[in-house]
Length: 186
Image (tube, rainbow, N blue to C red; front, top):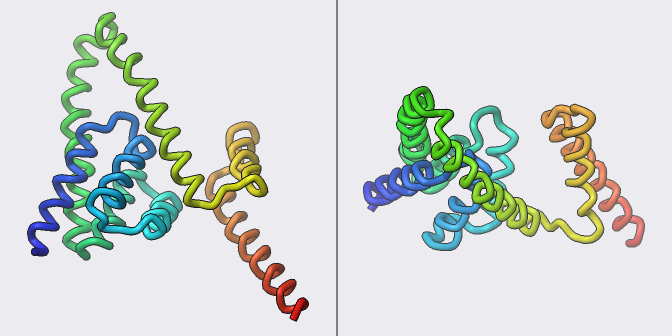
């Protein structure tokens, strides 16, 4: 049983890695759909928690997700095969494309192919943003937080690491204030 799951993990991440253009964020909706909705290996909340960990740790997002997910599903071996499944397609594709681009990078057909893929990648990223926002309980009261974070990063050059640490601290402060307010009511 475990051997079959290990093989499934490898095939899943290999397939997603092979057919997703645009990196980790473009992969999110595909990974979520497979792991949460189809295979039901993880629940939605567990997946979002794994995403938070994957995004806050150093490294490539898709690799971090495959490591965390593989580990949660099948332990250490699941982690290794998930990572290999996620990395190997990119390795082979980059190897191949680098040779093609060196030879034909300015050819109109090659340029048109890459321009055609860009809107699809954008759509995949937007779907992921929507799903993550929905599961992160973004609502009419707190929707401004992601907008402020985006502005701070894009226009003021604030490091995402600083943002993560600051939001962790603010989250704890708000939690403490909320608890204090509830205690005062009692």
